[in-house]
Length: 186
Image (cartoon, rainbow, N blue to C red; front, side, top):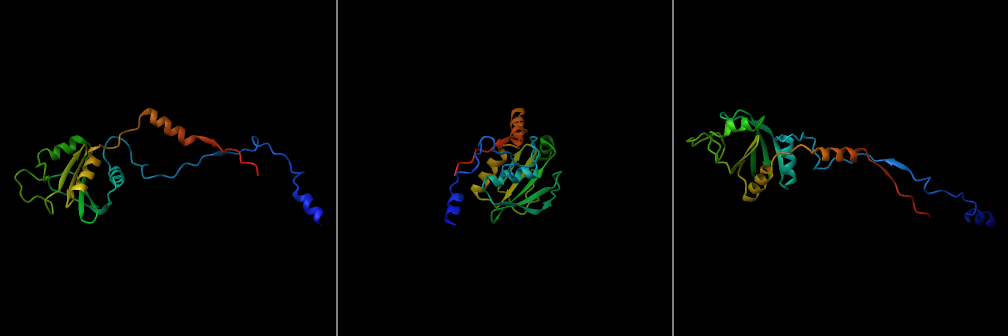
């Protein structure tokens, strides 16, 4: 019996395997989406998804409040957001920069109310008003740090279209087949 076990364990009769011939070729599965991957169109204009993605990356606790707000002297409804525990923001997304300019240029730039209006449509005096391209954002009850982060995030500009080189690199990365290295001998 011991002779049978020793013969089976000696490994002398094991077939030789060519490691190069047996290296599997595996198609790479697309990687899962990360926070920096956005399904938002990159067309140089602000969209809700682009703003939410960008502000979340800035490190702020930021979430949609789930409702919108209509202001009599602005032509588009605003989307409400919560920032942290107490701050809030209303974002107005226009079709383009000219439409935003048409609404905003006649208003007081610090309160986003008609000039001379002391009451306005806001629940309180805005902490800040930020205008970048087709986006107008009004912050309420925000700290200096929150204002700075939101201002830097928005004034950096809307996501721009990918260059032709970046599109080609992305397409190549999505279709690349990788060869796994040979397994080490045991």
